[in-house]
Amino acid sequence: MASAAEQMAANLSWGAFGKASELRQRIWFTLGLLIIYRLGTYIPVPGIDGAALRNFMDNAQAGIGGILSMFTGGALGRMGVFALGIMPYISASIIVQLLASMVPSLEQLKKEGEQGRKKINQYTRYATVALALFQAWGLAVSLEHGNLAHEPGMFFRISVVITLVGGTMFLMWLGEQITARGIGNGISLIIFVGIVAEIPGHLAQFLAQGRTGAISTPVVLGVILMVAAVIAFVVFMERALRKIHIQYPRRQVGMKIYDGQSSHLPIKVNPAGVIPAIFSSSLLLLPVTISTFSGNQTGPVMSTILAYFGPGQPLYLVFFCAMIVFFAYFYTFNVSFKPDDVAENLKNQGGFIPGIRPGKRTEDYLTYVVSRVLVIGSAYLAAVCLLPEVIRHQLAIPFYFGGTSVLIVVSVVMDTINQVQSHLLAHQYEGLIEKSQLRGKRKAGAAKPRKAPARR
Image (cartoon, rainbow, N blue to C red; front, side, top):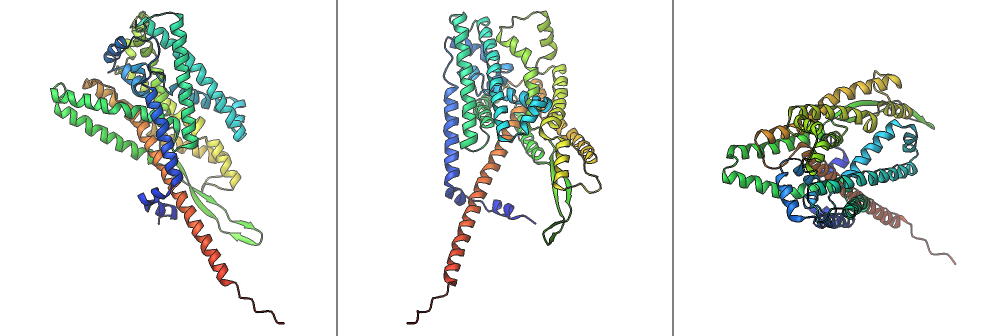
């Protein structure tokens, strides 16, 4: 039987949306900041040769240039002030989260509540600045080597570094403002908008190739059906749960005895989300990125690495799959789901798994269950990320599309829809509470007996 919240969610309509004024304000605020982000991708970095850059990115569009340009919303292809995108902040967040699970001092900060969370956020910002400085300097040097600068030199490098680092920090601020005063997760929405903004152009290019005969009609239809099937598969897997039955014993409060309650501990099939795919892609694309923006001026060692580990190569696919599986297990057990913490919390709350003793036995059982669930979750992640890579290279599709971007888009859409529904449900509950209070006041006023006239 559906709960009251589920029944209310099923009854949500445009009428309820029209009455939720705070939700509308949050949506308009979010859209306004995302428009500012899109405008910033068209503001160029000073000193760039625009014509040479366009020719360069057109040649690299099917490979690394397409990958990086998609994640930055096309800002990298135009070398805009947001060319680094929000990826330095994402990488810094992942690194700090992993360190917080392994370094005792940082782990203690996580347990200090709001103050600890603020300090960890501050460390993440410092790490973002450090990563952005490193990437911006490397990009400035690579632009010089690729003959994409009007006047190469130290002044050009410093101006590029300041502009790109400033753009990344501004994007980080935009994301925090969207999270606090808008709807959805700001950082995820920025990545989402960057990916979606590139889809119409790539789709038009793909269909144009089909009309000219460069790509056969069966291939065009097959790719469209494959994308639809992958999206449906991702939605199904992201909603899939493994529920563990939890039992709470009877408890006595004063003179009353409350019966034991039961609930479920939900474990997602993919607890790590898109983090393994993003982290694996970043590490594997590092040598290709260096080679691409340095004008392919590489030594014998780098040439050997690129020959075996370039996108679409067999060793690249094998290592990509292995790193996705490794990071799925590593991130789950160290960040997103710690069996020892969950077992300790259940023990403190008086809950237990039927047939399993609290404490160490519960921790071992949770580790066993999560490890088996992750076999399916990591295989799903690897399949979604590798299938588009294989098809793209086998069919010579002239633009980049990958499973990582599909995962991000689907996850962000689902999360944003859930937040919108939560705001609408909260608004409906507030309306019900106000009506019940008004009815209570009316009944209380009607129940007041009339005072008899005082006798004189």
